Length: 77
Image 1 (cartoon, helix red, strand yellow):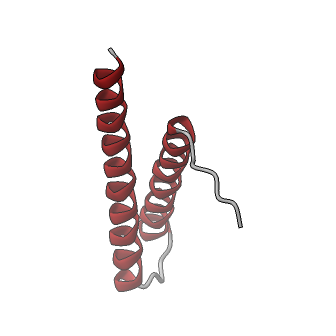
Image 2 (cartoon, rainbow, N blue to C red):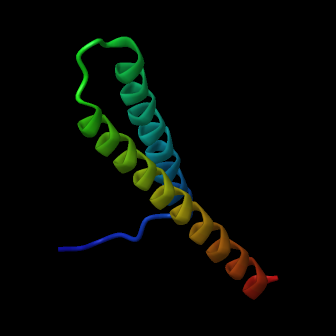
C-alpha cells in the first residue's frame, strides 16, 4: 500500500474544518439547553466538553503546522 504525505494546506484545511465542526457542535448543544424544556444537562455538558476538546486539538494542529511551515521557510531561506 502506497501512502502519500498530506500537504501542509491539506492539514490546515482539515484542522479548520474541525474547528468549524466543533464550534457548530458546541453551539447546537448550547441551543438545546436554552430552547428545550426537558434537556439532559449532564449529557449536554459532556457534549460541550467534547466539543471544546475537539476545538483545542484542532487549534494545536494549526499551531504545529504553522511552526513546521516557519521551520521549513527558515531552512530554505
